[in-house]
Length: 177
Image (cartoon, rainbow, N blue to C red):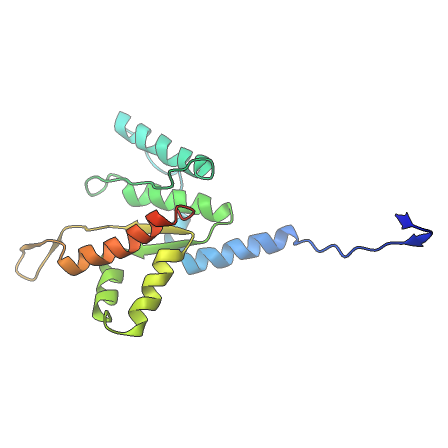
């Protein structure tokens, strides 16, 4: 367009589609889910019972509506082999494809690492990453464990404190999933 006889120019910068795909792949690798993401899809979740159809439907719907809902939490509990990890991984996969930053946290492993450095600066850095990542996927949260003598170990006060620090922060910052 011309203004007063002189052409006007405007810089226009736009990311190409291939950059978006590269970013998604990079996020996938950082999420900690790269290995299982290929096999844990909604299509590969086997439904043989009515309850499985219900949880699969809820899981498939969550990534579609999460941006429209004020509620941004998805919880699934159940016995070993019920498909909790499979469905939550499929949800994380969909959210990654939407361009969200996803972080996978295997509770037992990560919480032990964090409790080991609780009095060091590394603890705060690790905590902030979990508190502030856009999507946090916690797997095997408070999963019952057994000690070397076969006795069931319950969550400790340190486990509960860590969980509170992560979850309460995310609750107070509702834009996080």
